Length: 170
Image (cartoon, rainbow, N blue to C red):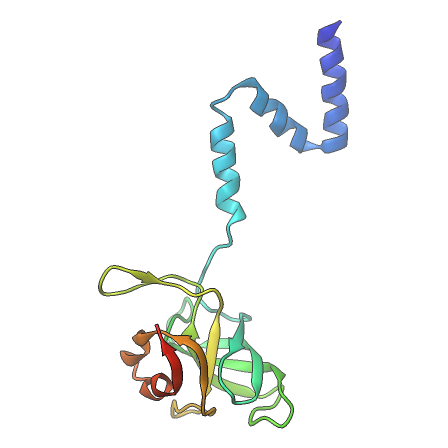
């Protein structure tokens, strides 16, 4: 009687919950299967941090008038842009009466990236968001202020003007 009772519940559980009940019933059988399944789910629950590539939305951290841009093309490398790289972007949101208008195609330097970047001393730096400073074709910033932390790796990439405008160098 008890064997048929559990089979009725397992059939009802499969029909109501789908494959979720199969995972739970499989986890009840043995304890060593629980650990790999939890590990497998935790790997895919984290967001993968990758390069800044086409159609990536970036926050603008200067006072040029743009609020948000979308990357059109990374100018260096096939895979995408990292800290200090120059990108071509389209302005998606802009402040009224700003120097940059919505729909313009602009150049920008990536000053914050969510992807980890190794440093010479062995430490790694990563930020919570992807951010950009809008520059002209010569690489000079359009805005006069840069908000938030800016990594000192921009010195190697020859973006000294952005470092002088930044309020905090990380």
